[in-house]
Image 1 (cartoon, rainbow, N blue to C red):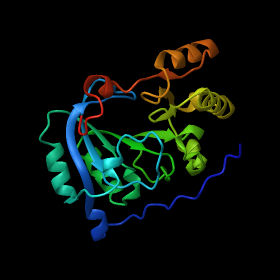
Image 2 (image 1 turned 90 degrees about the horizontal axis):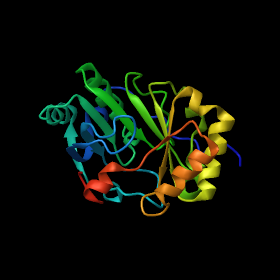
Image 3 (image 1 turned 45 degrees about the vertical axis):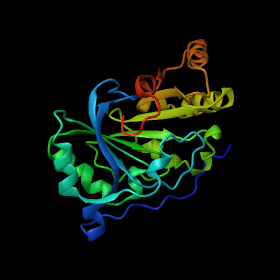
Image 4 (image 1 turned 180 degrees about the vertical axis):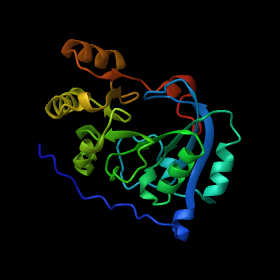
Length: 231
């Protein structure tokens, strides 16, 4: 399979009116459901809008609507919770240029910030203090053509790469990509079963059988609260 991608529009920087307001779907306090800080109390800032349409998307309610909020108000809302962990998510957060300034200001304020991004947008513009959790799209997602493979060269041990897998074909595709690119030597690699689609125990057996250098994960929040928005 050719590792080419549809070019992603690079977020514009600067301090225009567009970069001082963001369209926000929700800001909420919950346990981190996946990735490195799983289980830890976290404030989530969910931005509205996404240019992708993955078949397993569980946040389609964030595609449209939302409320325009000034960065000062977003940061004030984050500060009402007694945690220093903040996850900026979506939708696709990097589709809004002001997301870059939000993350920079959160880092400046002393928060440990992670970004959940689709991997279809350029991550080189993100503040290096942010832990970038890049979701590489598999064939089963329906959006594999959108992967921006140049992002792989930007990853550091501070970052993580996530593969949501729908079936054996997805697993083999992800396994081969990890092996071919040496991805596990660059950052932490997460393999996750698509919830309700791929049996979690089956994926665990595949990982063990191939002795893959990856972290198996499930979406903790779905086992606690189901598909409830804002949890």
